[in-house]
Amino acid sequence: MKRISIAIDGPSGSGKSTAAKNLAKILNIEYIDTGAMYRAAALKALQENVPVDNDKITAMLDNTEIDFSNGSILLDGIDVGDSIRTLEVSSMASRISALPGCRKKLVDIQRLIASKKSVVMDGRDIGTHVLPDADYKFYITAPLETRAKRRWLEIGERDGVTLDEVRRDLAERDKLDTTRALDPLVKADDAIEISTDKHGIYETAELLRSYIK
Ligand code: DC
Image (cartoon, rainbow, N blue to C red):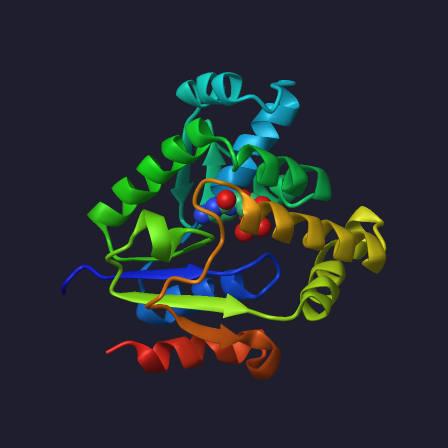
């Protein structure tokens, strides 16, 4: 079978990861969560007290292994699980993802993975920058209020945060992700836009599937 690549971009909490994961399962190809890669790098920076500085983060990443195994993200060979899903890590991931050295390192790994196998890859800049020649591109979105409620249901109880805090965090991350100088979150001209507000996140994978020939 021909190797295919499917790029899925969109803001935090849009349901793109659930849709991407389910689509990969339906198509029986690999799902690559690039946000998890930035989160893993952020976790290490927090653990090792590395400041948000291009040279320091780049040097840290020179000595870091970030990889996937059976859909799980491995940081220096260890499955980091849900420890990358806290608000603290989210915020750090957003900040370090604006650093050119950090982006270059992670984009190189992402392109290498996609050059070897068929992938559904989700993130912010997949269709515009990482895989501009992807066979299919989707832009998944939903209103801020819907995204905040979803995220809060996911992490609120576990982390003891309020809906208000989650909404503020998402709005702040939207701003950072869409206004950063390097590869900001933007819909690729040739991406198909889908709002999960109308479709619900579980139907979305089937909808995406219907576009794949
Ligand atoms: O999708 P996510 O919330 O797990 O992503 C975490 C952070 O990583 C997010 O603030 C933006 C950044 N990111 C990025 O800059 N480029 C990507 N391809 C994926 C994520």
